Image 1 (tube, rainbow, N blue to C red):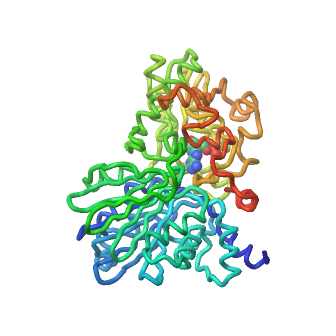
Image 2: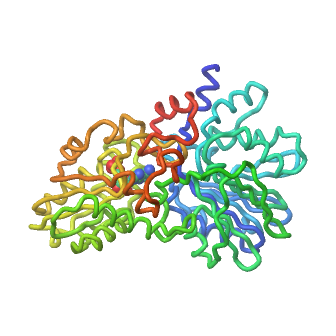
Image 3: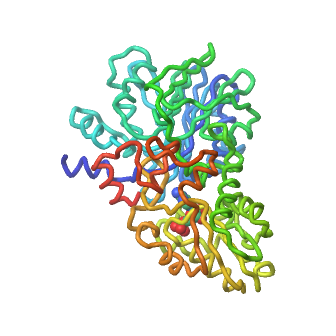
Length: 481
Ligand code: AMP
């Protein structure tokens, strides 16, 4: 591999949690997509894009920033985007290296016509595949792993787009929920293990594909079903067809979608995210009971788990921390300094509630430890007598290679320190994480099946269901995925 090629591939980190959305068969496909992407904003705030087909031509718009900044009523471009089928994407990345050319959906002209694609997930062998493609003449326009799929589809000798996509995906490893658009068809695919979510919905005569059900609610669409792991759905004027891209196996849906990433009002794999979080909180209370005056969530992500904790323990729930909603998620900040200050910008102590109390703080996860340290300090400054931290996930000790943004191992506090040292570092009076079996119990399982885990929980266990290639691991480490 030459330096140039390596550099080209590494210009931008690949790891990002994203949202995908698609519509087929509505004269308002562009408007529905804008609304859907808006509901999925939490999955990616860096950039957004949309490609539509109006029966005659493809239209496209991409931009940095939030959906509402790019697709709104006053945007002249909205009329130009009018179409009866559409796909859209929200992108999440934590580095400043994002570039316009990496904003999805991508739109290309292939032998069978125009082809647009958007991807949520992370392809673990994309670098190797890309190198082979570049060596044999492919010219890449972006630095994303998603583009690899386009080149593989372009090279396929099969006639039908769906056969070409299937052939391409057989050469790809990793996690993906894809939406794609041709002039006749909306296509959705989920990787063989179903690591990332993809859901089918219906609105009158039109069909919807979405990362989460909250995007169905906003447009008044009904839930039809989750796309199966290893399934490709083909939606055209005749309705929905389904083909398999892989044999059925045990799925490994990302458990962190339930813990943190998905919106609590979403239902994924027929399980309510909110309900799951409350059950995790209740299990946490059973596992690590402590006497205190108040249960306080770290808002917003800690709220459902804290409610579950309070209900189970009988300790009153109070909003002891108020969140400013006009600040992005902590992780979006590029440097440690900026991240620390944004915790303060984001949260403030509700001093009246806190002063003189023994409190239990509930958060969904500890990653670097930045949030916990700041919040514990804030509670003490507000006069808390003691601060007991309870975490609604096991310690995060491994990076995710399948699309959730986590830092490299050296920056994961739980990978470096034992429980007591973490407690010491965040200056809490006590600290407990839910156990891995406790987490599985909360998800309705007896326990984690060690031989065939019911979920992907690699961030907690190191049990990666798709072995990442060595190239991928070293690049992830370098980029701080
Ligand atoms: P930290 O401050 O690094 O320990 O991060 C923990 C906080 O970040 C928790 O309050 C979580 O709600 C949130 N969090 C956890 N995982 C992620 C992620 N992948 N992206 C953005 N935020 C996250």
